[in-house]
Image (cartoon, rainbow, N blue to C red; front, side):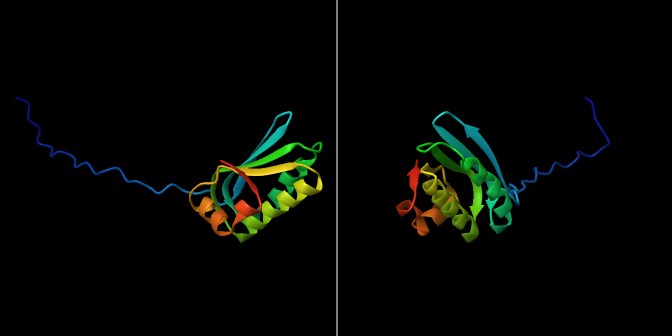
Length: 125
């Protein structure tokens, strides 16, 4: 029988850290012949207005083109972020583009519902 003088090292349970949310919004754009999908991720707040201008610059498309904001990776949106979505919709309308949002989840979905965006936007879900 093998014996050791060392006491067994106590094992602690692994520490679970809450998932850290990105402090800023990030985006990616996927172009197709008839549509453009803009995937937003992180947190959409007033601090993102310059980034949002970059996104709006991609609205230079032919009439009838579909612009879809995919919110499935968006963790948070504040009132300024909601305002930016309205600006995007208005810009699309001025350029005769079709505009929709999709994939909102959790807190973002709740806020969109409370703000009654389903009455102002086409929501693809």
